[in-house]
Length: 181
Image 1 (spheres, rainbow, N blue to C red):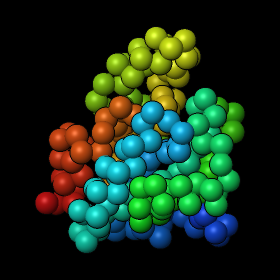
Image 2: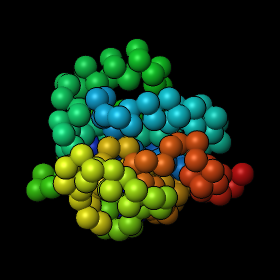
Image 3: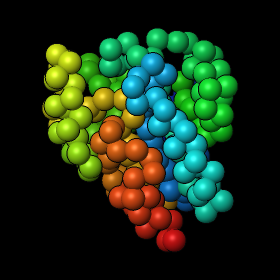
């Protein structure tokens, strides 16, 4: 079991688990938020999940309120939003911090594994700056909906910018490569 697979995480029901429960599966970990301009990505994430789950693929959502208070709800409110607004079936975990002093150990491990996102994080960073929003520097999480791809053996093999939509060919190709499709 890799280091990342042994880090405790909390489910929405308050149980403690680890990514080890998903051993042997390809994982896409995403820090999500309900009130972000990128929130419609839930639809694409659910489509990826539905398309590839029978091949051993899981999308795992980690709500975070780290960026402009865009995930203010309780775990129950977040889960209700995800299921009723976007028909999300993939696992969504208890809210965590993905950056800063209270960063969850899972995200500390993810960001230290791959320090820079694929895609065009600079375009997203410039967009934030155009709204006078301070943008985090690498290796910190830039914004909501940053994505990490984890191989079947628990290794972090990809990191994708928040503005890279789930159906982006680069992301889909990386998932398919890990699935052996």
